[in-house]
Amino acid sequence: MYECADGFGFVARIEGETAWLFLPRKTQSLPHVESGSGAKYSDGTMTYWGKGEEALLETGDEVHRGCRNNRAKAIWEQAKLDGVDFRAVGNEPGWVLEIRWRDRIVFVGDYGQSRYEFPAPEPQVDQAAHNTLLSTRDGGHELVVDLRGRPCHDSMSGEPFGTTVTVRLDGKTYPGCGRALH
Image 1 (tube, rainbow, N blue to C red):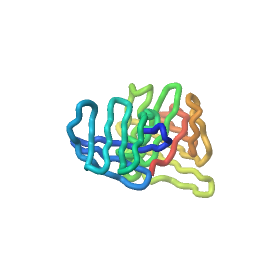
Image 2: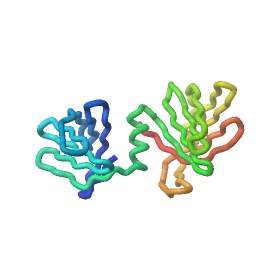
Image 3: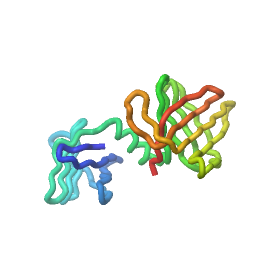
Image 4: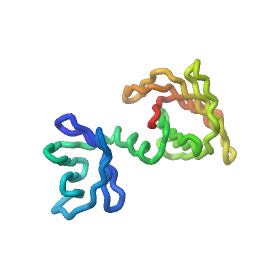
């Protein structure tokens, strides 16, 4: 997730010899081309040139310089591109929840030390209360996810989210915040 000095922003994803650029008004694929340094992708009219955490983007007459990867936003964009529909985070201990509706729910806890995967159940939705409840179990573990349509702020970063999330894994409660990605 690049944020450029001129205020322009875009997402780049590398898949083999192709760079996929997700721009404000379109998605563009560019083939890899030789370069003296960094990774360069171009179709002759558009060029993306990445070097470490920085990039240059040329789109016809426009040149966007000083583009720096925003790692915090890149994590969310990566999840979105990987098909995650809803993502939530919490702290003390750090945890991440990723929901792929009609597929699976992944909960990673204890700062990445534990990982649990569950089949995604049919959500119980109360539209009047702006509440969605998911309850599932697998491998001897039980997971209950409560999504409430109430503003929430991350306890460490202060980042605002539109959903207050409570995860209960085997009876232990994990409070946090999340947002829909699609």
